[in-house]
Image (cartoon, rainbow, N blue to C red):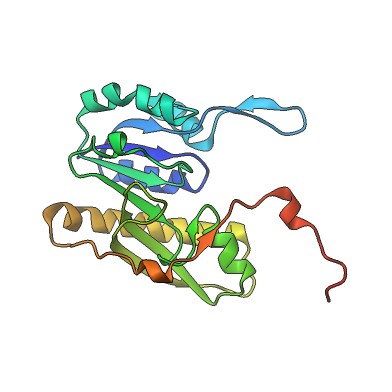
Length: 219
């Protein structure tokens, strides 16, 4: 199956690797632009781009910075004629014109049990709120953030000692396995996506450095 992949950070890598390992044809990867990193502000490629650069075969990479730049490559994505697009932690809303390109649409690997914790920081919010369980949702993408119907999900217990790093690794492993298992049944029509209960939706925001400030008046 011919795929295009949207993803940027470390979280996206196991998903992309799993797709390649089972034989899907990754025709193109869309990721964020290179950014300055560290005290020396060295221009650094996102992890997904680094993975592709070190891979055994060339895959075309696009790095649009804005919606208009993403739309400007729509003709190139159309020429690929992808069957399906996969999103794993891409971090941007995909416009309708792009969503309509793959014949089977877009599906997203989201690290929460939707409609709980839509948005950018579901793993951090699960830990901060003291949740005992979380999970991964495979969902069909529409024009709103984490809003589309659910294709599949899987639950995961949160250990008391879990950090963002450890929980992220568990969730992406679970998500990659669930995605690989789900794609054939979704494509064949065995799985019918189920609309989310939008009245139960909760949202997360991007975690910023200042959110780590300690309130010394608390115990």
